[in-house]
Length: 623
Image 1: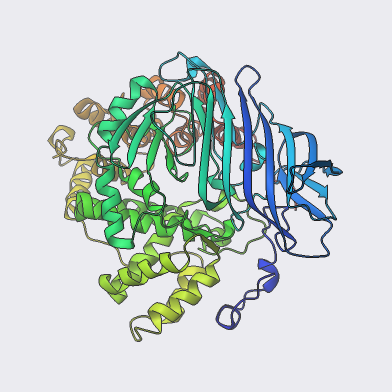
Image 2 (image 1 turned 90 degrees about the horizontal axis):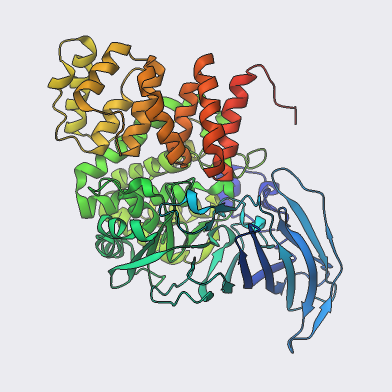
């Protein structure tokens, strides 16, 4: 157990027991830590499984330790062995505990002799929560099956037995076999020119946490976008993706100018099929990205800025537990804004910050108070639930406040030093605050009261003095929207021809939750929003149109929900539909058709929306 500093104990009075262990992992890193993973995988598309052998290099911390405890979920363990320095293997006894719904099954390996390495042979389940297996029909080109992983937050344990906690970092190497003509990619250095011979090897020399372990395989082409970047995607998508992401090198260079050298060598992007449940995943060396950002005008490439920013905030300096995930996402969202400003201008960066801030202001009061805190009480919160808008938006808002109070040049120097000081480490909120006080507040007294910091981090809601950027374009849109709703401005007279994606998002976000049906019909007639290929606009448009009672959009909304598996862009439409009995029945029909193409995380989220609508009085069992 790590002792907290005097600052953390005195200033914040948090219980030491809260940091004794990661509540989302069975691992016991105070006894033994995994330092390196050698992974051998065979990809079996017909059976939707990985046949794996994981060899874990161990650093024994406690001379009295008797066992190695690992996290697993739905793994079938075939054999566990100790491996000595000469490669000799000895069978070890192990026990796999009954499964916990959230944490999976604890794997306890008896190892009183403290072997340097333990080797585990296993097979994944077809329903592994961290893997999705797609048939050819579920891909863009419909020619070959596809598989990809999503390990964040605690889903790596469903395809590798390991210490599945962000506090534990390890290097890894991997040998992966697959059918010929299938390309395999991992969160390591990838070779765009690798022959599709079914035999791939990878090396990740930098220590990473388990949630950044990633693999994908399918009919994947590659196209270079710069001296240290390439785009990977299905053949019909790769050209469009390379064009959309052609500024990648500019983004890398801009971030290096602000925060120091890019530490990972290459920065490649893999555009996945539409079922990917997130916008992007910052897997080191190989960002996994949604195709929903490919709209042809680079208006959504802030996603690349965000995932690239994680190369400093998240991958380089990592939150030690899911309770501290704002250290990843809040810092990254702040850095994303700085990258966007440097490459695409301050107006766009301010618009994106305002969009997020206004949305959080609208919805934060609906959350439990503990979930409104940047650093919530760690127990009783599921790991996946920590990845909310609070971590992203409130976290970045706090950093923008620091920038405003201390000045940009001072804060930039501080942040650059922070990334260098904690490079390749996992830290908690209190360590970050120790460094903040010593290196920003104490060196620049009188700029901000420390009590304000405690309010931002440990109190629910958003502080009343939280600063917001100004946006003349958004102010003009507010006036036009008000005039349109009041009837003094016709839909076709809106000055919307030049609106970018963010400005359309802002216009729609500001519409009443249930707008008059005739107003929605007038908007559609003037601007042809139904059927838009822009998923960000589509999600907002269909949600409002459904709420207004416009059944004419239902089929187009269903097409959107079936085509896109990204949680953020799909679940709002289900929530809109289930508010009426007829809409609920229609949502169930859509889900029945779309379910097979959804990621397990999306399936779970949609099923919960439908179940809650079907049984609104059902109560959760008491804990």
